[in-house]
Length: 296
Image 1 (cartoon, rainbow, N blue to C red):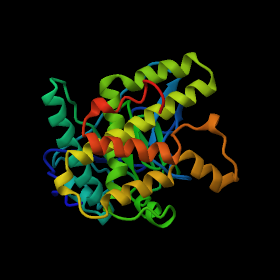
Image 2 (tube, rainbow, N blue to C red):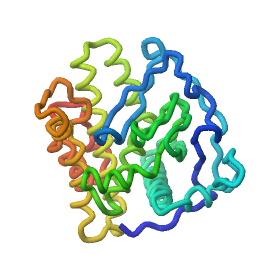
Image 3 (spheres, rainbow, N blue to C red):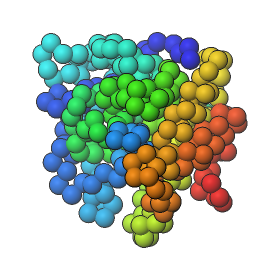
């Protein structure tokens, strides 16, 4: 996929590695329990819908800095947005996709009279701090609604290609676009509604609500791709579908335990994830991503 290079003065990028900032909730958790979603096996796309007591109030992580400002904390390490986004090829890929998603959704909100807020992107290596508590590589990329920030250990892209067989730049872009989809859900209040369902319902109903949330984020990733169709290249769709297939709950359960337990699904089957990604790509319309009405 041919994406323009990021604009360091237009995106909020920081460093979340341990000892390099963080703040807010920090790694102490103190009752903050992340509910993992959209996992890629041991690591995965996740949305950190944080429970404080029983989905209580959430604090805010301060210090989110955009543009070319100094955001690092370790002398000699990446400091500016440009340095952070060019520390390796995976970081640059993430920043380019993040910029593209920001441009796309900002335009969509403007056309529909909505109020768009820019999210942040923070990198970490191994362990870090987020507004939702500890950030660990095993969690995979995730979105924290507390500070409206996507967290990414860029080594995950290597795992995506080598462990899950999802290679190519579009597979990486899909990861970022899915996480950006969770930001859109946060802005629209969808994430709050799912939290309400989960705190008032049993485990099975809560899991089903999580599945619908994740499938909608997949559809939103497709909407982003559809609005950048002129940037897509031959094979991009196949790369995205390969990634979606690899992270289906049924596929992951078969690989790990040899059995499938639908009531435990929190992200959707491989077929569902591919279907909703395709739906977003075919329609380019976020209104067509209503996974909460009817069957999925």
